[in-house]
Image (tube, rainbow, N blue to C red):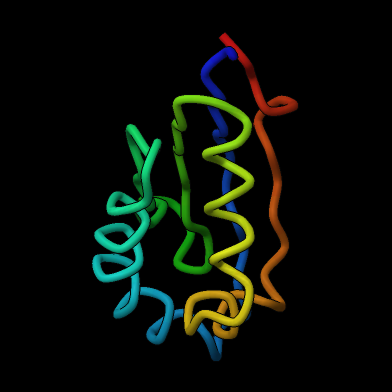
Length: 94
């Protein structure tokens, strides 16, 4: 199966910026513990306080779906639930 690469950004409400910022390192570390997660980065935009860029890579679609299933019900899911997510492209498979 091909590798899954996802890049984009999310825009969060002003009231959520500090909570999201505080949770990034923990969430990224937890995501990298998932089997098949190769790269997991989230970082704040230099231009806009409410924008956070992301870049994820998984060994295959199954690994990505496993991560997505585990995400539901997590603290990260709760604090980013109202975020608007924009993908650079459709998820790439290489």
